[in-house]
Amino acid sequence: MTLEQLLADTKPVLLDIQQRNLAEIEQARDWQAKYRVLMQLGKKLPAIPEKMKQPELLVKGCESRAWLMHYHDKATDKHYFVLDSEARIVKGLMAIMLCLVNGMTTTELCQFDLCHKFDQLNLKPYLSQSRGNGLTAMVSRIKQCCK
Image (cartoon, rainbow, N blue to C red):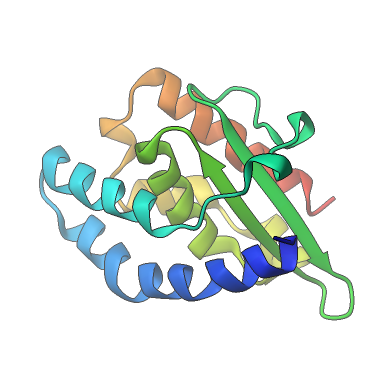
């Protein structure tokens, strides 16, 4: 499998999440309901093959191991990401993140306030400190791609 194939496999999943699941998470009134949706999202994303999970792709600061791959289409100046994690809840959180940022230009990515969007989804109050730190680490890693 190649990065291009992973991106192609990920794109329709992220579109589905954006169209169906973001509103569901935002409207969920308690953590149990949000947690169920996040777990489902973690199942939806295709896994990165083991041979592609290189140490330099690990996001430092995440509670469980998480890998983030980045592709920058220089012709269109758009950024695309794929990820995987050993923890389904982390994978679900990152799926939300990716559906928000995939396909952004460098300027859009640099200006986008991902933490604010997670606040709008009312997820942060329910995350443990270590998961919150992992979320911050992932945001930092994504933002590094626009420099």
